Amino acid sequence: MLVVMIVSATIFNLGTSAAIDQLDAIYFTVTTMATVGYGDVNLLNEPDWVKVYDIFLMATSAVLIGIFLAILTEGLVTTRIDQALGRFPRPTRDHVIVCGLGQAGTQVLVRLHQADVPCIGIERSPDASGLVTARALEIPVVIGDARSPGTLEDLHLDRARALMALTTDDLANIQCALKGRELNPELRVVLRCFDQQLAERLDHTIDLDLTRSVADLAAPPFAAALLGRELGEPLPVSNMPLRLLETTIPAESPLVGRTVREAEAEGGLRFLHCGGRWRPRTNLELAAGGGDRGGGHARGV
Image (tube, rainbow, N blue to C red):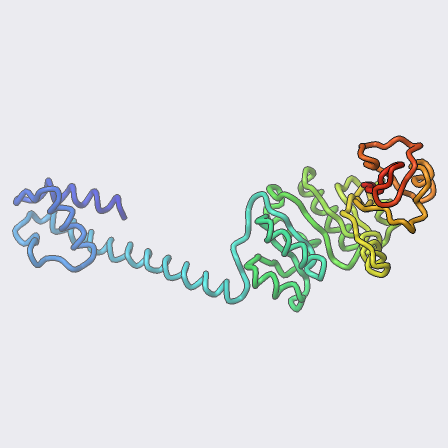
């Protein structure tokens, strides 16, 4: 439309007998295209070819304005309809694809959103509880099976940051992860697995970045809550979630009076810091609550 305006203004500026100056030519062009002109400036006494061009300009401007309004209206209406139906713009680069919007998948979406990481969900069931949360956070969701041909391809998998298979079906998660790795060999894949033995076998037989046993991850928080103990920060190594804990040894602890070597051998512990130093010596005798022999403040896994 801008090109048509420039060409028309040039023609009216140079082709009329009245020699309309440049500003008046622009003004005349705009009023002609907007169909509000011919009150002060007109082509009544101008050459026929200028009048023919003016007719062409009016017809062209009517079409261009109609197209512009149609595109604008479609954009506004489509955006409102998509928002009402829970359809939001899909990320195309450096995003995370989450397969399965159960409790785990929904929490992952929430955490990704809080971290400002672009993400998109895939869910087979239109009645999944996670769809409500995703719609509230304006996270796009595809209703379909990630294993079906074309589902992952349409989500720009080649430019995605990671694929997370988090459904409640181990077999579906494995198939989804393998499909993603087939389409993008460099893709980072996170696989949720309920069977601990299966997770360990996957770590050794399939080239996946990360597999996690739900039972192993859930056991420490339940045990800590049951015993009323503080839960340490998770430190996942392969499929074994270790816990990094900083604590003061209580006076009634069976560790009091034992050496670091004995405590590590009997308790399945690894002391990282104790007695005011990192990597404490193995013959250091442990004391309660900051005692003289070894200090009671310890960090370990």
